[in-house]
Length: 76
Figure: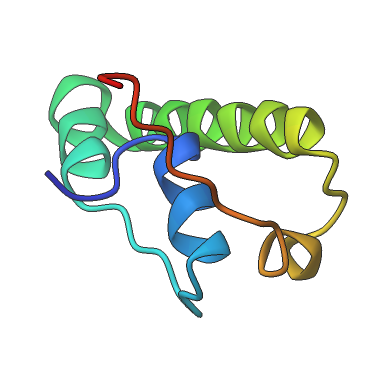
């Protein structure tokens, strides 16, 4: 659980979060590649968030905070 991907950050911000922290992905990056691994993790998260923001039609983090969240129940 927790925030591990750009899409998770987007959902947290759209739900009203003022801050999003990444723990596990950063530790994995550090363990596997040191400082370069951490940099790679942040670049990947940034890229994922950028794509999600484009798909949602948001240009800034402030726009994300006003993005509507919709829950779909695919079981019905």
